Length: 578
Image (cartoon, rainbow, N blue to C red; front, side, top):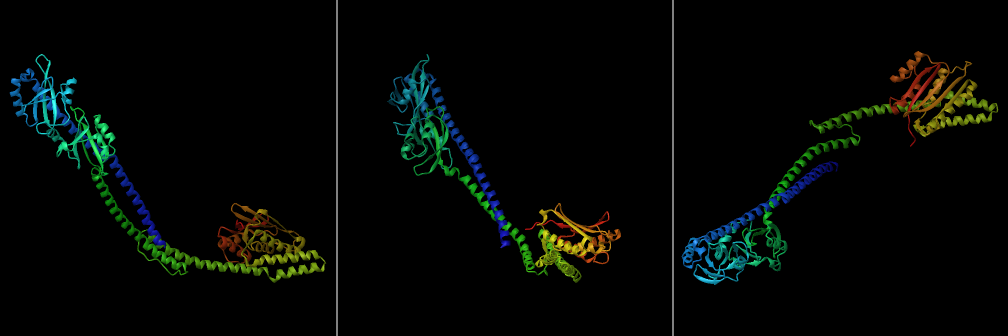
């Protein structure tokens, strides 16, 4: 139904607009999160890892500085074993918190350890590295302590004698746990920090680290995916963020940074990607939930709004349906002050206007039909018919057979067009044929005392005009302007022209000129639509009234007097034949 369609259209348009705006808002939020929040979160986490890596490097640097200070003591620079032993035992007790043990190493790699054991480290990588390096220290990768099998790292530092010559080395063995304790403070989602040494060994910082060591180079064989860039960057000592896929298919984010003062070590952490985006996802879900709630509320408001609009329209529509059935005894009763109330009051005024126009229309149609009927009656008046038949009879008696036939044919055409099967409108061609037949019959009666001419544009012959608008005017001209006793020839000229968007039909006679006072009275009667009387004959009145009833007050008859001639002009709409 119409009202449902209108109501649903309001909801559809409003719902569509709301959905589009809401969807655009969600997309913008997602875009903002994807391009701002998540990168910002990654950057902050990267800064945390980098800071912790630098803190680890700082811890290592502190241990290197401690060993360098020890190498500058007289006991170590002299490499006197009698002085070194008690001094190193004392250092071992003082630094037991940070160091597992100390060792003094000669140039050949023979080491005395503070637990009073001797070991050969000449083949160990860190010893070979410091022998070949220009630096004063070297750091080992994580190894297992020979004394207790705990993972340790060894910092070895050169010892110079008083003359500045290399006399030996000092080793500081540090529990890996002491070193990695700094990394244990990192808490990023469910992440677990780990270290990578220069040989790509990866070990965790919790639990039993040396049992969990794996190698970056073997990650692919353990069904980890997207790890090539990760291992290449870490081996190259770069920092960064990578996404890898664990064997169980879970995506993980890996954040890593190199550790300063180490030989290619890195600190890293991995955590579930879903956890990093969980907060942002919750934000999106919250916005989505609030948006849906707001949208439902707005749809409800729009439904109530549509209802408040459509219900009075439905009521008005029912009133209109009653009017459509022809019942004008209805009215719209409402105290509303809005547009719908104004529409209802306009409806009431329209009903009253329709009632008024209906009465007026019936009156005008009745008057119009009466005028048409009287014109038809005038056409068949006995006086004109008797005179015409009498003229034909004399023509026959005088053996003017051809003229008799023409007059009979003109009379037949005159009445045939006048009746026109009851049609109200005919073509201009038929109207001109009708008046020409009328003038032909009159000329046969009055002979040389009557002349007529008709001029027109042939392109106008197919336009439509009101029937029988010329004959009453011509008849009026003959009645009032033609003097049979006068020796002057009575001339009638009819001319049809197109003026802008209307036809102008001019009937000019050169009989007795109309009196100016009477001309003014006729014009006054036509302008005020006065009933026919002495001043205005019925033919002129009925013709003017029919035209105005059909086409409006801007059309009809007008009179002029020019140089002794009376001119009647008919203004008629230009209507093409459809």
